[in-house]
Length: 216
Image 1: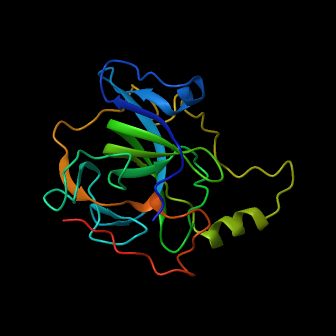
Image 2 (image 1 turned 60 degrees about the horizontal axis):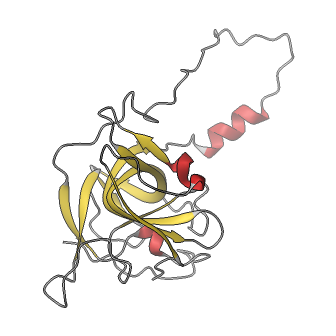
């Protein structure tokens, strides 16, 4: 499992104080309706009922949860995430999810990270976040491939109307900021050893058998 590269930042999110981060990270921060600063991030998971199963398998995690290192009681305990461990919820700063295998039933998620957050170098693009708390904000649902290809393959003449009026998109994307974004009051607590974005860059589900996610 990869822990990411060099530690870039170690900070606390989810409060009214704006995290003290380099200017390059400004685009990854947003606020909730009650003025709490959180980190905007992306990851892959397979939705199963009300849970999300990560790349590494396991029983899945709920939409809102707080991580707790499963090593507690086995060795000297520590809060998740810890720079010397792989515990915590993992996510990437880039929507392109570099280094992660796409497809195979997995869906891209947009998540809000809070609590203690670590930012580490990530091979390819952006940074790897490891966070204490994760809240799933958006589930990407791409159109079926055959339907998309059918639409693209259908030619139209410039003066051939389709009978539908144009729709003007909202000025602010849904769940992208304080207008609608809020965090649940009481998150579930999960014992997490490692999470999906901990896969090494360039790894593939087809070529490698994923290590089991240890969660209780």
